Image (cartoon, rainbow, N blue to C red):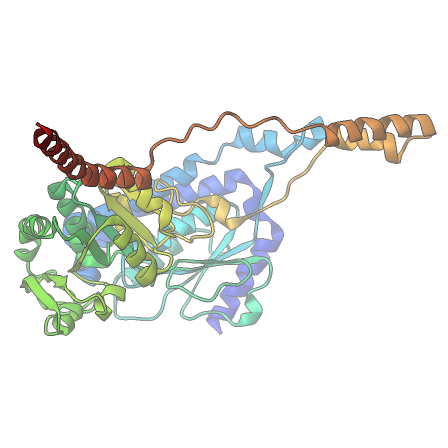
Length: 485
């Protein structure tokens, strides 16, 4: 019943429009930021206790959350807000006008960086002018308790609510936008984080193998391997695989030696020092070679293409590597095992990076780097382009409400047809529209075909074939000439 009362208070606040006042929103975010700063020791202790992440990783999560609150606060500009509000009153169009939806319901990812997953979208939703409802289950973890304490002392109690379970379906009206960070079914006003979508890395033999190894090992092993953006499988050219694996082993040593930070199946609270379930389940499978393994993770070479490991979402320190024969082979395999990957990381020359990114249906692609800030937080909703500097922009929690004060040039011309009082004016207006619509399209520019990826391969093949052929013909010609004499 307490949840029902809290939800009713939030709905009433959303109706009274309190958060439409930009100064009120600034006050709420300033108070939230100040309270978070004051609670740094408690927040860091809770994060490290629940996640078994290192103190440095806990600080990264905490500082990135603080930075996001500041970013959303800085986005609020009273002067610009006032100018946008009165554009129509001043005879200007407000084509970019947006309004808050009303209430943002946040179901956070609990297995990875819970603190960030709550604070960042909450700050974004408030900056957009929404009330917020956060689901925090009753568990033995410490972070939810710290979050409850911070929010209760920082925010107006009428603009937010914390519930222990998902509200009834009757709560989700058109004035509620839901952010489901653990995945869910698509529906109206729902932002879904594709938490089960695979992330794939492709390493070509043209890549800097040491740099590629460092990037994928850091992504897979940092934060105990729980980030949804960490590569679930690394597809590496067969001719570069052994050299790449040697670099991977060297890079993974410092993580293997850490100990005390292991997890089981990527779940917080698992006994430290235990190998993850994926390593244990896969190491004895046919066609799986254990490259290296320890109490804090492992590196596996999957040698059979039909292995279920290639389509498995990994949530721990387990790096899965598989050989490909070419970039085209890698593209086909990515599309087969991942469908629409959450992210693709391509390590190769830039032309090959472009080629792989173009022909894989990935939500995100990165050339020769892994953006380490993606390791913190849940997967971003794929309904909007990801800005790596702003995981949850305020626009996600608003709806477009364009308003126009002026008729377009076309509408003014149409008035000459539809509102003209004379036949002559109507005929002239129609004649002008016809002339514009029926005029010939401009000619294409001269097409100059360049040498692309496929053409380059064909020419290389022809060259390799032509050289011995020409040599043979030369020898035959020379022999024929000598026989004449």
